Image: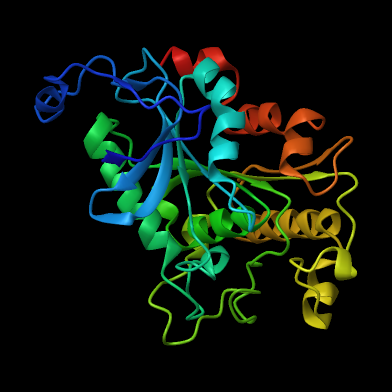
Length: 304
């Protein structure tokens, strides 16, 4: 893992002794992990063009949960990590925030499966492999949060890689992949032969998922060009992010019940917020809602 010069607000030091990398290679994980003093900007060792942001609170062990947070089309990965840092420190959670640049990952929301750019799901897997190797965290399954386009990415990632995901929180995605095998991906689960993945409802319908959306996130038209606005999507999913999140949660719950699964699905409208990550965090309580859904009370995590 190599580090670039950060913004002024980002501290780059690692609180780990020079001998720590040797310790991390032993059979037994250390009692506490090497922490970061602030949010660290990292370059993937196997692909230095791939950036991600990392935060490791002090005093956590090898079994600490890992939360991946994924940006929208504004690509504000560092801001998201910064705004979640307080809660991550309080709960003892490792934060990983990948940056999917527009030139390499034009279609990251759909995992790069439509032939426009590189595979964003594979990039995240390489990042997580490096994080586990570098800091010694041992868990195979991660928690996912994404806002807007990131919300699209995280629920589709969970559908494609359910064995790697513990739970998913989605912030105001523009549209969703419904658990309908008759509709073509990304609107539904039907894949063409060129897509080298499988979407496995029997597995992904076991993953707890939640949608959080601002009560004023109802604008469309030219004001919201990033919102998918087609006749088919409007008819199936609704006209606004508020409607679409509600319908998707209902559809996922119904599909799970049809398979005899009592999976937790949650839909929450955030007060005083439109389509803004910052406003949702400041005025809508998004951060607290996400952490409560994913992890419960802080003491439950810290006592593991």
